[in-house]
Amino acid sequence: MERVKNRLRRDFSRWFGCAKPELRLDRPLISFTFDDFPISALQEGGRILTDYGAVGTYYVALGLLGTDTPTGRIVGNEELAVTVAQGHELGCHTYSHCPAGQRHVKSLSAQCWKIVKP
Image (cartoon, rainbow, N blue to C red; front, side, top):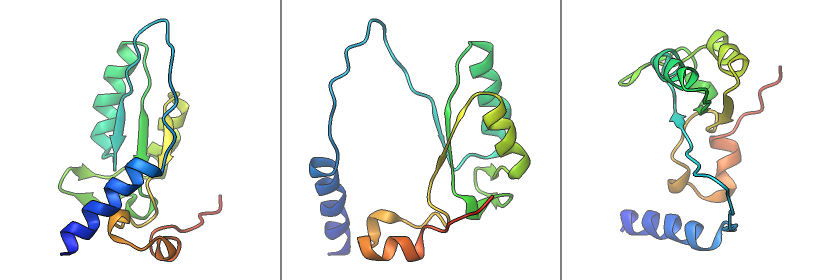
């Protein structure tokens, strides 16, 4: 039953939670994104993008900085600065990387987000 509830939450948010603007472009567009990015995503992925004059969007859960995960070591503060210096976009992927689709909206701020002051 929990799987059904989670599926319905995701579907409802897709159907009703966002506007779908119409884009009129004069050339094709592609977006390169990296989720929970390990250092290799910046070193290898970033190098490839730079070679082609492109940039990407790197999403990070700040609570995971510098930790080891199945995909590799997650970036640290120094790599975040390098990411921005190379012209990439840096996105926040909650603080603790909790599964937002499985949380009630009122609990998200307490369980997933943390204000990080510079």
